[in-house]
Amino acid sequence: MSTYNLGKMQKKLKKYMDDGRYEHTLGVMYTAAALAMCYGEDIERAQVAGLLHDCAKCIPNEKKLKLCKQHGIPVSEIEKSSPYLLHASLGAYIAREKYDISDPEILSAIACHTTGKPDMTLLERIIFISDYIEPMRSKASNLPKIRRLAFEDLDLAVYMTLRDTLAYLETEKTALDHQTTVAYEYYRTLIEEREA
Ligand code: FE
Ligand code: FE
Image (cartoon, rainbow, N blue to C red):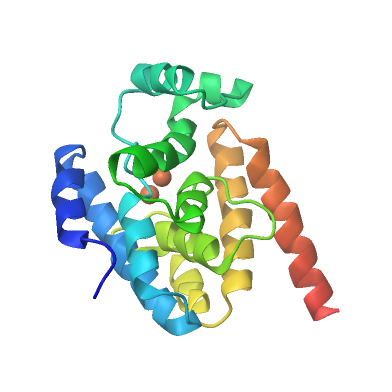
């Protein structure tokens, strides 16, 4: 018997998302399931985390800030100026309160999916990578390579994703959450030491 009602979750999510975001959400769910098969993570957990990772994405930015304030979710300076970043931590909150998710690993995978973080759990890495490589994505650099690597060497795929994300944010002059840099440094060292 399965623990979660994925169909019910999907119906509810669809109401809070535009079509493009919902398509992306399904893509992340399927990709996370495939990676879970590949690496021996619980498939249903991966599906749930994939489904809910962007559950707060379509909330208007002003409302994101307001909800965080209301519920005591910390807002950093960078998040104050780029509130879209908050959809990760606010998403974890909504997953817990509105979708009855109590599994702390699922919640943390949602909370760190945008920036990544050092020493991520298997589920956290699966969601982080699925968000980047799901089939609807098309713009990111090195996508074919990272898509293949994701199923061969998850840490290397995480490293390359963080590296390319930083490079992209650099050229776009987009707000960069310090967490992304911290995560990148961690995985760069990990890969370097592994290859030494
Ligand atoms: Fe997201
Ligand atoms: Fe996403």
